[in-house]
Length: 489
Image 1 (cartoon, rainbow, N blue to C red):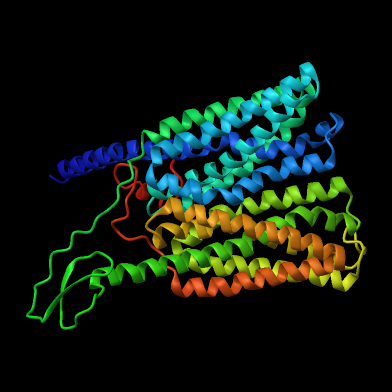
Image 2 (image 1 turned 30 degrees about the horizontal axis):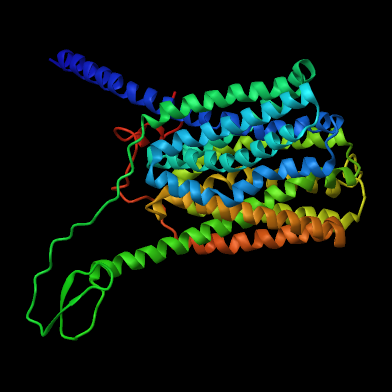
């Protein structure tokens, strides 16, 4: 009898595993589509700096190159909120529109290069270039908003793991593009490289079509509360917001209890989104801005250009190891405490670099220094900034579904605040370097990171950790169970 029962238990476990396998494949396919969705955008962004020397040889001035490099960032600062509103109203259409707009921009830029190759510089070539840059600027912001919103709607309780996977694959894509771009340009020229980017854009459009078929149309929820029992009253007045009739002892309009609760919740959502956006601007924006001058800081302290690049590449690779640790930590302790951990880690790194700068002075060697303090401190500090920089983009995005009913609009607002903060940090870092050298720039970085620590403490108190149980998802079943313990196999 025991053997008979054991056979039945074994059969039941086998059946359960087979039932769970399709859901794991479904979640893996969903995540793959999300990654491929942004392939063309990420590849185009990482290919531009690598192609800079060839662009200068073709006669592009530094000012023109700066304008081209800045163009995507301008659109990313102005249009994310618009993409977020569009996604909230029509997720399927927006999911296809973002990569299709990006492909259109890449085609216009390819046409500009083709005209320049055939006919030289002309008004048509310049018009195609400017139009392509403008369209690329607008579409690039939509890719990020749609990626994050689709993840939030599809992975209700495992959003952190999905975002970690997205950040990791984005870093890998950037490394691969940085490696292959010079080789493609040397063999096929700049026009051939642009055609390759168009091919990646086609993959993004195809992924968007497949992804949109898995999304549900956005539905506005209308609350139908049961009418309250009326009590004897002198007057019947209308609610100021929903215009529902209310019994009242006073002859002026009131706000019903339901509308009052909704208004309080609305202000809570706005406050949390503002704090999350401000934390992201202070933390991620400051780190991104400082990364642009970190190579120069190392070169100033006796690193060679090649040595500084190799050192930062090693730091970035080691920092990626923090992503699986972040997944485990978020499952055990939640996301909100990690905001404070990331901010404190980055602040310690900035203070350590500031100490190294002040301790040794301007231009003192950090490469091969006989002083152990000056050898270890900047290296450990740079690693701390690298790990915090990998953690920081994930954390505020993971808290959005728990604190906002409309993830598309929320992600659009966060992206807008982030890019505005990054602009301000970049300009502030440049001004600080001009007026006070790297020491003043490091003081500015430490001040911004100190603000992020304060904001992290406030968010630890006010923000919600988990989304409400009735959060709408785009995928059948609960795929959170497939990812809660790690990434799908």
